[in-house]
Image 1: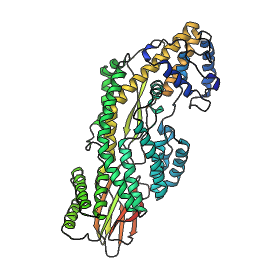
Image 2: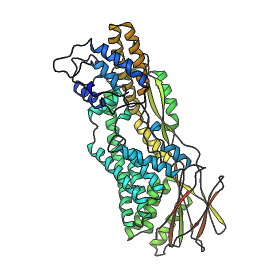
Image 3: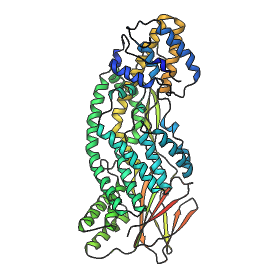
Length: 531
């Protein structure tokens, strides 16, 4: 449905919707932001004519003050607001189809279009992150870093702003949380710096890689403080939301609470890492400062990073070998020719939604429900990679699970998400009640039409915020081996028949970077000389 320009609104005479607790000025601002000719949703055009008939009929029953731009009561405007945000991120994200097939060119084409069309809008950060990751997978490192820089600049702008405008929060209350800008999550910021460092290494610019790894470390430290502030803000938002009529009662309903507990149990039971630590970033920090050490302080930094990485992956034999190599360096013994294989496997969790009826009843309202986000972990991935050289075969070992990192962040957000989703469902229910009541007082048939339309619109906008960085991997692994005399290794994807022979480039310390998206997708292989 497209809202025409002549429906611009001035402040209505009165709004008897105390349950919404929305200031009149914020309501008018939100309405005017939404009612533009280019704003449309995926609902059928068949709704347009009956809705406009309802608007005209209702407008005749309300007297507005002199100077009002149009004679639309606020109840009708609320129905219009409900028409925004009709499609989820997953429905818009065709990149996933190409990505899962290993069609990097198709994914790149789709991501480029999304990133360009996003401009500086509410989805700019997420589309730029997706595009940058795909460009990196295509070995377009310079372009990838430009997109990462653009996403980073947007995330910094949101972080400096600190607060979302009240008008936007009002709009989200009446529509859904996906209408708010995607500001980036702490693990997004850490992974941006990590990938930028890897891109710089691939382009032979270790000095720039050093800057990005230092930034990644700082972001892990800052994330703890940012999360504490986010928790405090979430507590305040939860307290404010619970002041709205019906929210606390809905949260306390045993059946409703039991349903949520069963839905979120798998995510809550996933063992977290320490707050906002990405063990792969920590390991890469150690590897870089060991091989690029300018002095003893760099070596000490590398040792501490390897010790931290080992604490997160105590069964990883390769990190133990790195710690031994560090000790040898302190004793003056140089690193022997060594080849590292970093293996990036699988796909990060995506967000899906589950719709649950909210235990709040309004007469004349046909539908009261809420869509809650859930994490959907992705199977179909290589659990490890085999590396063969000189007749000996080794397996990669786990360094970091992005599933655990993303699940931890999701759990941190969850209490506020649940409360705000309930508050939004009740607010939309109250708006529907007001519209249906006004229509029913004028005419019984009009009242039935209003109930039909409000039910359809509520169902359409009842979506969760499903935006998340989907092109991240599921896991990071590592393997290290003495560089063979013939400088040739073979990469084997178990159970798939895939084998890739790699002729190592010149270097004392080599890094072979391997990416696998699914078991059926081809291995993507690149090389970097670390020393």
